[in-house]
Image (cartoon, rainbow, N blue to C red):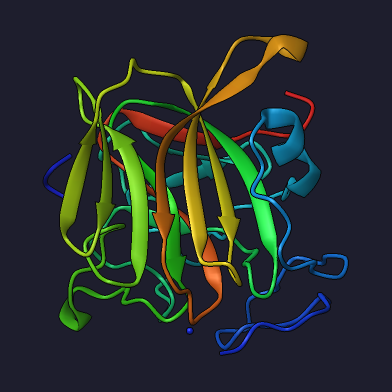
Length: 228
C-alpha cells in the first residue's frame, strides 16, 4: 500500500512500561493464560483497550483529530508535522501510543473508504529505505480492510479474500502471548450489537504489538470509545 494508491517470553503481570522506542504500554491486570478465546462481543468487551493515536508516527498526509481518536485523509494537503525518526515517511499510516506485550486487548474502529486496520510489531520498518512498510506487506504486520466487493486480510505481502457484506465498524482482538489476532464485523446498534468473525490469525508474536491504521484517499478511521 503506497502513497499513490490511494518476539521475548511473555511476562505474567502487566504494568505501565516503555517499549524500545519509548512507547507507553497499556496498564493491565495479571495476564491469565489458558483462558478460552472470547466468542461474543460481551466477552470481548472484558478486554477493552482504550487507544489514542500517536501523531509522532503519522505520515504527513494524515490528520489527527477528535482527541487523538480519529485519523483522516480527506485531501492531499500535507499536515505540518515535524520530521521524526519514528514517523512513516511514505506509507500513509499511523500507530497508537499503546502497545500489547504479555497481554490481550480488544478495540473497535469505525471507518469509511479504503483503509487497512491492523497491528504491527514494534520494530517493523517505517521508512521506505528499510523495506515494505504497509500494514500486511511484511512479516511483522497483519491487517484487514474492505476491498470494494469483499474484505481482504493481509500479511507478509499476501492477501486472503473474505466474502462478507461491508460493515462500518471493525473489531480487533489480539492476545500477544497466545499468538491470536482476530478481526470482527461489529453489527447492530446499542445494546444489540454483536460481532461476526471475519478472519483469525494464529502465529507467534515476538515483539510488542502496536495497533495501526493505513488510510487511503478520502478515507478515515475513528477509534471508538467503549460506550459507543
